[in-house]
Image (tube, rainbow, N blue to C red; front, side, top):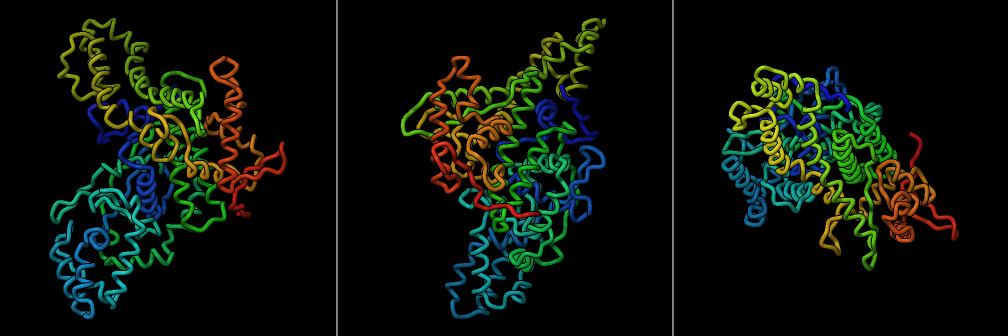
Length: 511
């Protein structure tokens, strides 16, 4: 098993340390891939301002400032009277501003004393101000959700668009981990430990962090300068492994996407999907590591056909097998202690039960071990296992399913079972991340298998059909359907019966 980094001293941990020890603190199902990227950018902005972006002098000692930007958020998302006032005082600019400022000063959330009159100097014409707000509201991340107003986020045009998730109670705010659940902090630490971090920082500096984009400057004008740079440092997340090939593969895909000659902000949806895929692979690989399962993590992908094929059942079985890995991993992690020298010393102790309590508390940080109803060392492990399983089922166990759906990898379309069936959006992200200009189709399938474990064609499924678990022809037809899908998306050209090329429409220039 790979050595894990120690749990930081004084870390604000839960009442048991098992999920965190395996995957980090934390992978969280209620935080979508988009919000993971937004949290990541918040961390990066803070560290960039301090001159230490992607620098980790000591592992898991991240501290950063998360900005609240309550003026901006009230204006964008807690502003129901704006359009009413716009119409009611349609031909009186001064009356519009006067009434709106009164309403906002009276009904603002998360601010003590606040005065929104500064906006009148920046935007003399109220109608222009309304139009700007309406436009920015259309750029809300996951804009059709029903999240509270203090958990709404606009597109990251620059540093002045970045702020944390908060809970508002009257005039006060508190940090909330529901939608910024630390997964973005893990992403930051992964890229900090990758070999491409400096190049990634350069690209992000140009696209976001320098704050020079016109839209970022516009958003900055909506905020009083005194409020824009507040906040107290807080502890970041915990990533248990110092070095992994997964970190480099993630960073390579980020770089490949940045090198595509696409408009500046068009890259971000593809970053979201590719990041979600890599975090899923990380999640499954860490489970397999605990289980000492050296078999390559794989995903049998069904390229949806007009009628059901055997691939659909294989894709569903592949999903089910992967979905059970995390539950198996926590059981192995707990009961694996019985194979250690420390547990043997417990069994040889004059008071094995007391010795077991001390060892379990030390290894798993189980804060309630003293109140356990168990009477034997084995009973303690059984009780801990049950409690960990209940907690694991609430969030971490759902990560594979929820994020798989979010990035377009997991689907129930035309079936009652969940299985791997990629959407066009994910397929395009895969092309942009792996094809520099053009790539022969079979080479592309092999690339997806080697890099992500995607089983699509008969060559990638060789072990399955050689063992009699699949039909070679069915996988050949599966690959043909993918070829047709890519062609319809403008991502593939067939030059002859024996030659088809996957093409990146954004041919990368020299960087």
